[in-house]
Image (cartoon, rainbow, N blue to C red; front, side, top):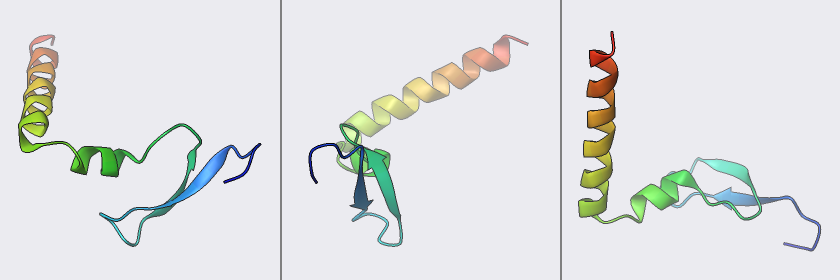
Amino acid sequence: MEDGDTFWLHICPYKPEFREYIPVGKTCKTCDWEELSEHEKTIIRQQEHRERMEQDYDY
């Protein structure tokens, strides 16, 4: 990477066929997710489930 670059090529180790240019300063969402512990993933899934349930009750 050189000065002035705005994107960098990322070849995801979790999805080998997945290549994308990511803005400098950002990270791959797939890699971020895979690097979380099982406990952290469970907490996030529970929160997402609660949010979906709240949306269902809004109707």
